[in-house]
Length: 358
View 1 (tube, one colour):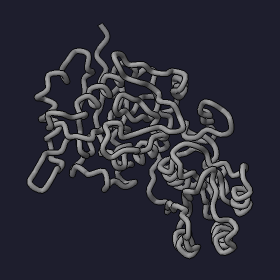
View 2 (spheres, rainbow, N blue to C red):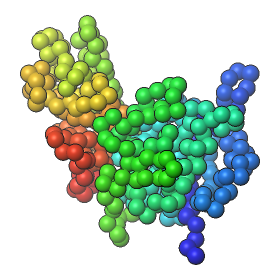
View 3 (tube, one colour):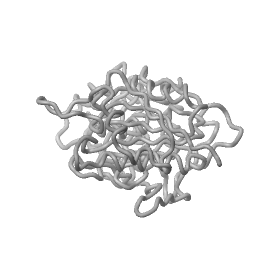
């Protein structure tokens, strides 16, 4: 009989393991592990073996920053050869940012990484925590040889990590992947859509590499009616290297405002990479479609196509911290490196090219 798969669990904090206190829910060291030990289903033969290592201190995910992304990535790297898959237990507020960042930082990933959490703590009688944890573990155990990317599992759906965004505070279905179909759905059975998953790394392939991020200076700015160009100018001021510009519709902005356009042109002339993404959840920021978009492109703005704002921000961190010059960063922001964007009419992701990840 083949040995049971082994899963390494990185527990960062979040609602899932919180305890109710007079001051509200708080994460508590060791509490999630204590609760899991009290639930027989986690010892069922269908569940893979797993080990848990938690952050110290545990974090509300609102406190997450790029240094924590690096910490998670390093925990995975150090145990990469000893486990078949990896589960990151994380708060929901910034889970999409972490999932997107890990999808770029973990280069040559040949094993599955799933992020999950819950809307209600595991200690509550009625919760979504037990189902999310158990199902994520079982997906990792069953399909560890065929899944090779960073994903989010939540409320019966397996989503590509860098396509995920949080869409609800109060529903169990807290996350969605508006511009890319779910990789899998869970009902009576677990159904993986193998047409949608990233192709596996060649074997034997290169070893896992972790790209350190956090040194770059990047930002995000949401366009709104009546914005003063000076507000955007402050965001684009040195030492910023890249900005995610959340625009209307297909990437539109007030391009008839000469001061707005001057601010854009001055920034791109200094080498600031401005990436245009769309504010609506569904759709693509393609600067070739409308005159306003073309004006932005002529001023040096690049299309983010259907990337989420979370993925675009994480990708800017990644590319600048890899040491690419601004011109190359602008080019690679428009290329799918880890399935994070779709260009034109293509129904599936554009597989990343090896030369773009070196």
